[in-house]
Structures are given as C-alpha cells and as structure tokens.
Image (cartoon, rainbow, N blue to C red):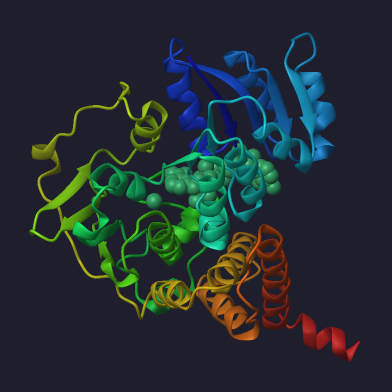
Length: 393
Ligand code: NAD
Ligand code: MG
C-alpha cells in the first residue's frame, strides 16, 4: 500500500490521477489533496478517498472548505505555505500537478523528502531545471515524468547507456491551429484555442498547445530529464497523437511508445512504476487508426519553437524568463486583453528587455520569475495603450 499526495487535485491531471487511485484501493491510500480554490471538487474528492488532509492555496476559500468538511475527520488548511507544508508531509508518492511555476516550491518541498515525485507540472523544470535536479540528487528522490512525451521517452530510454542514444524525437499534435495561416491565427479566440483536437486539458496548457509553446517547454523539459545534447532532441508533428515520442539508438533502432491520447496511461505508468497497473483504456486499434502522419513544424507560423530552442541553448535565466512571460501572456489572452499572436510577441519582448545573470538557487529563480512577470505585464500594458494614457495623465 502506497500513500499519495496530489498537488492540484481538482485539475485535469489531478482528476485523472484520482480516477486511477480510486480504481485501485488495494494499492493506494490518499494522504493530502490540494487545490487553489475549487472547494466543492476538493472536498468531494477528499471525502470519497478518505484523505487525511485537504488544502486550498487561496486562504479566502478556507472557511468554505471547513464547512464542506465539517463532521468528517479530514484535516483542512489554507494558504500557500499550507500547500508547501502538505507537500512536505507523509506521502510515499507525490503527484505534482499544479499549473505553472507556482508549483515550484511545493514540488521542491516534496522532492526534499527523498521519495517519489511524479512530475506533470512542467513549468518548474523549465524555469529551475538545475535547482530541481540538484535537490532530487541531494535527497535521493525519484522523479518520474508524467507528461505523455517524456513518459514515452522514459519508457524507451536506456538510462544505463545514454551515450548509445543518437536522437530523441518529441512528437507534437500540432494543436488546434496546425493548418491555420498566421493571418487566420491573428483572430483566434480563447474558446478556439482551448478546443484541442485530441487531448482534454486545463486552459493554460491548451493555449500552449495552440501556440506550440507547450512543445517548446517540453523540449526544455526533455533536455533537463535526459542526458543528450540539445540538438539531439527533435520535434516532429504527428497529428493523430498515437506515438507519444521516440528514442533512436546509434545502431539505427528506434523505440517508440504508443497509446490512446488519455493522460491516464502515462500517469498509471508512473503510479505503478516499476510495476504496471491496469487502466480502463480500450486496446489500441491500429486498423481503426489506419494511418499515422508526420510533418516538420513550421517555425515561421509558430515562433515558440525558435524562442524556446534559443532559450534552451542560451541557458542561464532565459528559460525562466520565457516561461514567466508566457504564463502572463497566456493569462492575458484568456482574459481577452491581448490577441493570440501577441503571446509570442510578449515573450520575445520580455526576453529582449531582461537579461539577468544565471540563477543559482531557488531564491534566484523565484526573483527572476517575479521580475520577468512584471516586465511582461508592462509590455501588455504598453500594447494596450495604458502606458501612454498613464504618462499623459
Ligand atoms: P488545470 O488548470 O486543469 O489544473 C490546475 C490545478 O492546479 C488545479 O487543481 C488548481 O486548483 C491548482 N492551482 C491553480 N493555481 C494554483 C495556485 N496558485 N496554487 C495552488 N494550486 C493551484 O491544469 P492541468 O491541465 O491539470 O495541468 C497541470 C500541470 O500539468 C501543468 O503544468 C501542465 O502543463 C501539466 N500537464 C498537463 C497535461 C494535461 O493533459 N492536462 C499534460 C501534460 C502536462
Ligand atoms: Mg505533453
């Protein structure tokens, strides 16, 4: 029996994780569940799974959580520090499924315990890769990648002979705008951007899938997790999302992992690792799928590919700045304060405006993240004319 804590239990990944955990009551017991403020979902999941602890990051939601859990013996807490503390207690397995770099400190708290941490939350690895990996090395924690591509690579990658790997091929669905022209993309709305053809996901990663920043963040994530030269990681568009990534060896053998586009497959692989567990997935029907297509990504229509590759190669603070600016720009797009094409423009502007020294510690990364966010917000204000109005007034 393994105890599990789910950080971000009410989100898309959190819900998929709960589904698997609840199907295997003989294997897993729930220790803590956390969410930002979705009290109804969090309390229902905590009651169903008999969790020991439920935590909301937004302190204003704590009274509602207390009310929802009254009469149970489930502990409750609220506030950012309480989420970080929950991550540092008790569980054998922690699922890191908060969205964005705000998941960095809770993930670090879980890593410090030296147990198993399943990484769905990719932004901390992008912004603070060295810091996260050094912490895992120091504590002896096992990091397992739940992102479908990285889980595919993990399953195919012979970690005992990384020098025998010639290439990693990251597959990419191409997102909802794969066949749209730049002019068409200019007018795309948040509703159109979050309508992914293959995967059902949270709003932020859905927008990232439309800009291809998701694949760019995943390029950096892959470079953090697997010891190969950066230019040995390639991105290939594969619209059916059946092959989740591939590893090519020096002898010309290429191994791939295939499966339905359902995050419960890679999550189950992490939950049971190094064992396997059953999932409710239908068997892969290759005849029904019929064909698998591949194409090269278009760097002109999707500047995220170039921006992320440059940030990875330059290293230092660049990935953290790129990630922070993207988070702010995506939020502004979802809020209808900027257009779709402006997301990449704001990331690029922020990268041009800010070039600090390489962050060496967690505190340094958090400082770069905070400053890059405020610069990105200023870029958005300038684009919206606020700066002009402010200076005139
Ligand atoms: P989501 O928006 O559906 O869920 C996010 C979760 O984080 C929710 O439980 C929310 O309450 C919590 N949260 C939000 N803000 C918070 C805050 N400030 N403090 C604490 N908790 C907060 O997101 P998702 O799609 O489940 O994605 C989660 C992470 O997993 C992301 O980093 C994403 O890139 C990654 N990921 C998701 C998928 C997918 O299919 N959804 C696939 C691969 C990787
Ligand atoms: Mg992915």
